[in-house]
Length: 264
Image 1 (tube, helix red, strand yellow):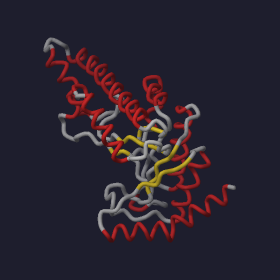
Image 2 (cartoon, rainbow, N blue to C red):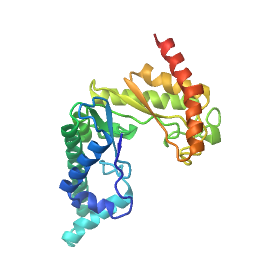
Image 3 (tube, rainbow, N blue to C red):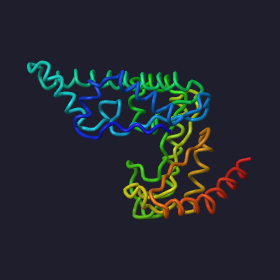
Image 4 (cartoon, rainbow, N blue to C red):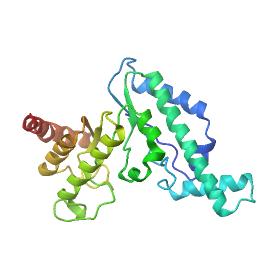
């Protein structure tokens, strides 16, 4: 996974449309060669952009505001409505070019890898299918995010800790995301991103999922048609590394084996 987070300040919205694409692609090539040194690598390869969205209606308000400001700066006579229409067109055109050129460069550098974008499609993309076909056509695989704490579903205290969501709601959400990815991908591989902890607010402090939820997150994507899964986590200290290693050896690996045997 090549983790490419643009700068997260308010100026990034303007930079997205005024960016030096050539410099970005040059740096991208160096990053891929460093992070994926094998030129014959044929595994899953994921590009991760999270601070902005290529769909105007879904991206952060500050990005829309900065895009409108760029239009008005070029000609103050634009009305607010006309400036927003042009800003929307400019923004989505810039985002499309940025993402397409990025994935094309990635394919050129590691042509056997299966390239796609992390977490896309979100469920909200179903409303914008016609405007986003270019992304699924350019991707080799789709990588929906099935983390336990994605916002958007009503809270419940029945199974998930701290009033997050019920296991039933989580199972439905996982299934829907995989099925949407399969439909939009038109037969391309779908590989689900899973996270083995609760409570995204802590990122590293959240407790590991219980056995029932762990079994569901391994079983449901497969039943829904996913071709594989990537389980994400990381450690920032020796203790966190030891805890994660213990979880993998004592609970995750045996559960993967059990779920796999039941699916045969």
